[in-house]
Length: 439
Image (cartoon, rainbow, N blue to C red):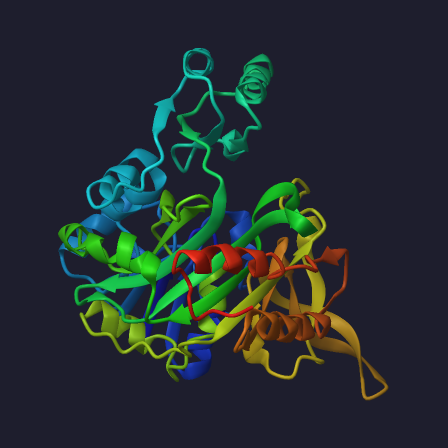
């Protein structure tokens, strides 16, 4: 199979390498000098994607920002695309569009108001006092607009400070605060509808243990494979008709806050693309021998996905010390070796911002100055996964893998991925969510 990955930020390296190992021909398009280093020496990188569109058997679209108008045109023409076009991307990057789709099938909507002016938002809070969460409303917006306020004074102070600092008031929403348990489900949709297996998840987004520190893209996730998902029944399955209308094919994730008082799954946001490291962790639960054939089958309207239903996978991210800021010059991130000799099964390793690096190592007591290993090509380095019957077993297995990885510079990882799920499950089970998942 000839596979083209259109991946500006170089997020699909793990998938591409698994396809190469299976015997597929892979071309990986990335954009920009930083992403350009990722995958060097490991996969065939290309700087143009259009020349391969007509010959690719499968086209993976990993981003929902770039080339979306063109992708919509290709999707309408019937190209074998797994991933979003412009219409699908709007579900995520324009929060109001996503909310409107959910509003059509559910009352689980948190009242939200969109702003592009700090003064207008501050005036609204004064007229409608209460506790709010500020969130960027478009993908281009400043992510530091995300802020969970303690009360109205706290949020007014936050917005006022941004104004004083001269921060641009990109589009953002003020959403009423709901106390509860954050819970998500990922489904896979194509011309044949939803795949039968769902992947329920618990994300860990802060840099430090106990959800302290700066918000990151993600530092680890617990994923449960199931064919009985109450959350999917409520907020995903009813969307099928609308998703068919926009020719959606690919991963779709819905993130909610399950109300502590009554169990209402308040909708927060979609992820209309492959989520990371979600896809890496889901990979640990998929049992298809060919990593790409089930995806092509999905594009053609067939569900051939095989997964370890009832099993749990925990993924732990190993990162460099400058994560998630990435403020250093790109050369300072490159070519620190990543040694994985002590990992028993390489399938538990999922390379992210990695390249091939020449290094020096000891082999059976002999110095080898011509050794080649994975090397760093950024700060979000490797996802280590473990699978088990329970959350505890899966995270124990994941940390065994983590301890087998050595990075030749100042790397780190959280020590508590999965711990908070114990309390989460006690709350979720009260309302019938994740009923068969055990801590």
